[in-house]
Image (cartoon, rainbow, N blue to C red; front, side, top):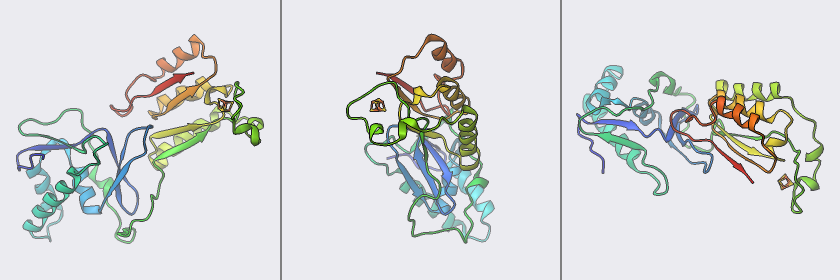
Length: 249
Ligand code: SF4
């Protein structure tokens, strides 16, 4: 159990990202290994957006009292307590959602703008059904592949002969996904993602856009391409947390 004393500091574990999904606030795991998310009603989402590791619980309550002046103070206090208790419950296989500290602020946490987490009343849908915006952009960068596995699905389709989409188009798509839909995760299918003639340049740009992805290839990767990726930030943590991986088989 976490300490929910009024003078303790709370933060959302940077393993998760908060997002306004139009009708609900969602928190998803920043991972390409498993898609995992949970959702909050608008009030709990607002509370979550204020937990930046630098505010005490009392400060969060005071902000909400100031914003919701028409609501009785006791109602706000009990709602914050309820929201925190619900956030504390996490799937046993996932990292804890909340971090807490009794005495000092918590470093390197994400500072969200609470205004981004206001859900319009007409959009709010308590009978939550499905995500409004995908968490991960699934990308088949090319159907081509330099290998010839017997079990290859591409051989049963026209995937291998699909026209090549140039890198400029892919970069435009990635940028739009990030800016318009706050996409941070890329899932790669194929074909072999390294078989695209401009593969190294495409993945280097994806690194610069701070997108998290897992590259797996059977192609030859030469030193200059590997260096380009490293120089573009492949090894840097995504959003201060996520780690990209590159599997060469
Ligand atoms: S590596 Fe994948 S895409 Fe390439 S031949 Fe094998 S199964 Fe097909």
